[in-house]
Length: 460
Image (cartoon, rainbow, N blue to C red; front, top):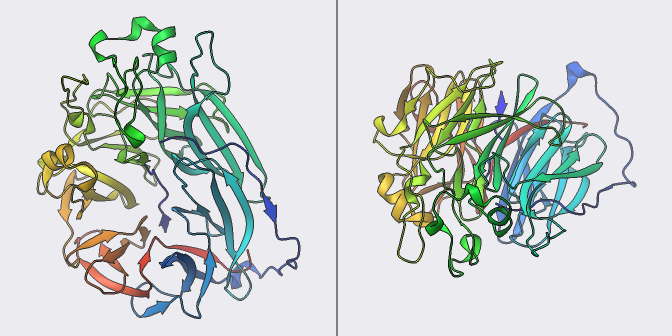
């Protein structure tokens, strides 16, 4: 059984001060013998402005409801399952401070809060040892002699066992040696190492001031402010990467981002992440044997130059490469052009399922839609990709007018996808066989929407 985490995920800072508190009034729960431990599926569901955790014994069929069966919890943006012990709620509050909490199942199978947290907004997240990790990029607290603030990679370590927290930061400027600031997208544990996709993000005022020799073309430097939201920029910067057709993976061998990682680099694909406004979604995943696969949508093609804003435009299509278990560089013999398979559509997001198979969420109307339609693009096409056979099967049997609630769940050669519909029906989990790519409706949830699902043991 495998639970997916994300990526995301899809850009900024999750840290700062985190306050953490445990429920001191809660009695110590008895521990059941391991052989008698029972587990339940735990489902985040939303009704109106409220979010609930509800439980179910099966995802195969039937229905559950939040009414009389749900515990009201934080209305989280992301849910991260830490093994079968806890599920963490992480709230993305745009530019404001976020909140979070961890939950477990008590002896009666009721979701119960364990610890509460506060922090800055989220870029990406995952697990590392006993910790839930959050990572983001933000300004340093100290400016240079010109008044320019260097960008920093900010990390938060939320311990799942005792609720403690620690923070750290490292310089995000010139992280790859090319003068650009970077973001991280996805956190993957494998081979006693940690892997994260490094996304170059152009050159800041600080970067251009300190490494002017890294500017590949002076016309890329902005002459006036522009953009909006997460795409806003000031005069004097390079707002998008000069290297859209390269992918980078940082490999850590210790237990902290304070160490200097090994950087694996390839020019077979563009940077490896999904993207939705300011959020970066995880598109790197490890299989059971320790191979790490990196998928790229080929977003560099969407960097189109105008008279007002010059950009370096990428050319590479959506593709996948890998780092074999135990290696620290990309496998020169492995590459798949995803846009030569199925309906020839690029990737939006992806998740590992089982047995070298991945669930792909694709741009239904092709690369032109990805480039031209942006956040309005139709990403409802789903497929199963077999990484060993280098084959893709489009999923059939899903209803019309769907959206994926969040992270899917893999178990016993199948993937359960949380599907929200626009037809007035209740959301449901659809079970997809990874060999046939056929979807069958499973558990219905009487709520407005569902986010994901995972399995937790009782009495944790």
